[in-house]
Image (tube, rainbow, N blue to C red):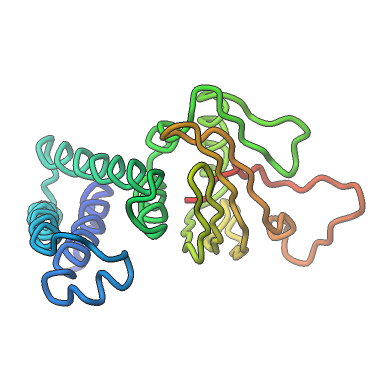
Length: 235
């Protein structure tokens, strides 16, 4: 007998559980490699304690995912823990307290939720697009950009590479690959430049190969706009 398909909420809970278990237990088993990637820490006991707490959250999510029972309590736990970690990531990466890897992690955690992405922006933020003369502005502009971006894909996944960070800005390299809504596979690289106002993103500019969005075998004619409508932030 074929197994029943896993409900979407169970699949999301399972992915978050595995991520939390891996990252939470990592400093417990190999603190040296953990600090080599994320930067040195002052209090090792605190690193291990927080890691174990994250692993406990991951375990609770794993149980719910395997039982295919992701109720209100687990949803609050999943969203609340992700937002708490997102706040810490953004708060201290912008203050220079932790390495750029945490900014990449924050963007990855937010990538599945449009409203979480919108929450990263300043109310007067500008998002610059290669195929638009005028930027999208404000929270509603950011919301429309992300909704339009996600609607292009059946599946999309982004891996972040090297990053350069400063007190008020950061530049991120990334590679996105997946399947467009029409079934065409896509794979392309880009760079996103972020400017900050306090703890929020005030300006976002992204540079990438827009020809990757054309149908297979098609070529861009001089002066011809590309069909994609990607917002200026990867995730």
